[in-house]
Image (tube, rainbow, N blue to C red):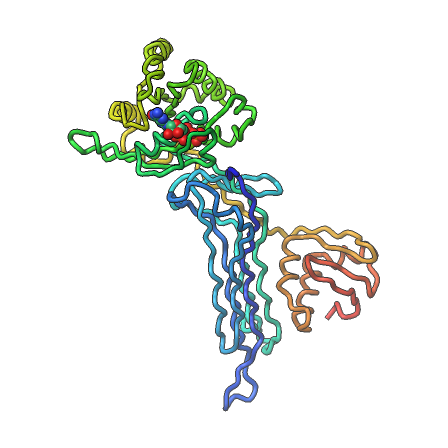
Length: 434
Ligand SMILES: Nc1nc2c(ncn2[C@@H]2O[C@H](COP(=O)(O)OP(=O)(O)OP(=O)(O)O)[C@@H](O)[C@H]2O)c(=O)[nH]1
Ligand SMILES: [Mg+2]
């Protein structure tokens, strides 16, 4: 299976609960509040690791959780922060919110990082709630829940050079001949199912030995007729080609009609995106160790040159013509400075800012009511309703936000249930006005 798209569920750590404790000291009869805050929950980040070339790490594991924050305790001791979780992805990974398709970020450069699930804040301990008129608050906040969501990762591999061609043309063999990569090579089509990446050392041929450029080469899985329509996972493979600076188009010189072989791929590239034909392209006519290829070469070369395309004859297996091929690539590639930049500059990171507005909506819900609103739902999640004082505090928030008034306006009666986020509360009007 080719993995250029995976769905994962991420859950950041909940914040730890704040403590509601009081000082115990030998000479202080009634100690004041000393409950510390809960620790923040661990967050989840996606970070680019240039050593990764595929999303295969996510093939089996789909659920990722960061650790929760520790609870606060007495003597104003704060809970431990949860540990962040870092998910490594290859350069060229787009990150989407799965349910809305919203692009959260497009990570192309090494070390680029994006927060995808924020850990919950720790709840405040009761020390924060002491006032001159209320010196022994039993109220402490519960930790805030961590974010949880489905995220989609989509890879469009970024390489300086993309090797394209029909299955079995010799792309993987050429990658292995040019770099230290060890892709699987076999005498049947569709051997390569995920792109392989190698690094080319241009200093090897440079007489002065001072060409320090180290472009990356990706061996894109074989394209077939109809690829631009999706045949043979064509869409996925063609997306990788979009992000390369240079295309090396490999043709098997022993094919019955190398011209036809060449044109099939050109057509698919054009149908996918006409701009691909404008990308700097080098045509490599492969398998020149075979007589058939040697015989077909002159006509093939002539036809390409007539089209204005640069072409080179090689034998990836025997290492023929590779010095010339590297020299041509060296001439086509940008200088070292530009090469250090990502091939595609769309790597803008979009930070999603979740606005916590005070807006709310009250609706009837079966026998009771339901209140929707980000802020109030969050406060409810952080309230320990078993602690009377905390529950009362929450009731005051309902009044402050105008939710109480709206419930009354919609005709709520004593004993009816009100659901807010994950909490179910019973309406007890007589207690509400203290
Ligand atoms: N004689 C000869 N055979 C070659 C040459 N290059 C590759 N081959 C052979 O062609 C077959 C296919 O080579 P691969 O490198 O796996 O081809 P590919 O283009 O990566 O194929 P897919 O991954 O299936 O798309 C293998 O049997 C190679 O040994 C060459 O220069 N000469
Ligand atoms: Mg291959």
